[in-house]
Image (cartoon, rainbow, N blue to C red; front, side):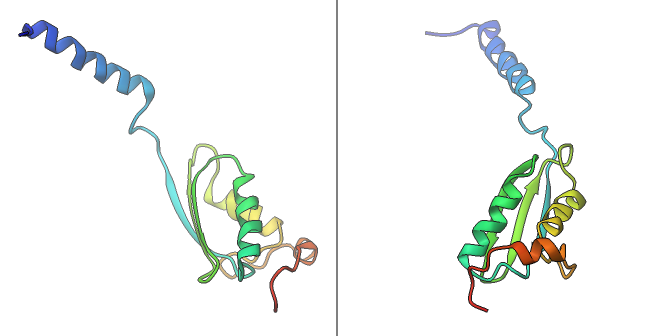
Length: 114
């Protein structure tokens, strides 16, 4: 079956409008890399992960307790890098050398051997 030119153009236009409507490719994201000093075992990795995922605007998260590195992709219209860092500091974590809240740090579980 052979389609006329107008029959082949409509689906392409429709697909373009659908893509624009759904917002594909238009989302602005920022990636943040942080060092969390306390994240020295898998148990602490889980605690850090739960703290980060409790925040609004987290798109992706990668953690490595062996290197104590966290890579977070955020939606900057929902959370800033500073706000995410502050949330971790408030939870008692040391982020990129900046010490977190001392009382919150003392209250953190101590699952890892020192």
